[in-house]
Length: 135
Image 1 (spheres, helix red, strand yellow):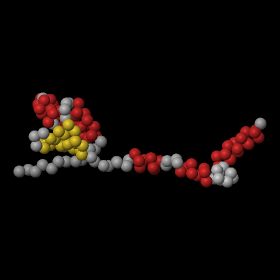
Image 2: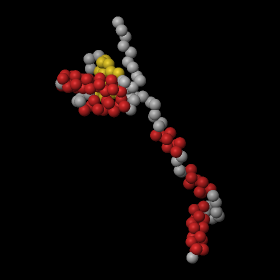
Image 3: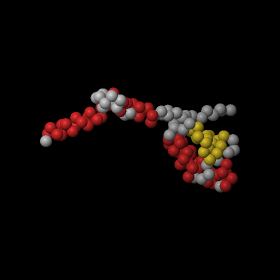
Image 4: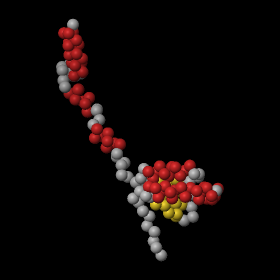
């Protein structure tokens, strides 16, 4: 009974390592299968390939809900170029509330915010400051 179990395990091993061309036992097929296994370093390098890259992302602010999208981008370390035209044309009071919320978020994370012209804002994450020329 024990001998049958051992011989079955050997036959599975032989099946696994059997070379398809010659029919002889070979370790090469087993080693080819090992190459398909990803190493931890490979997995980590794929996940963190974009780590440390800062993007400038344009976002249209249509409502207060878009403030949360801006917050998410800032938490990911991206810079946001916001178009406030839709809020400016529709509801100036809602625009003021959105800007106040963004200012609070910037204070909280150590970011910065500035208006660019009449209809754009620039919002930066932690450790990025906007230069303001004093005249």
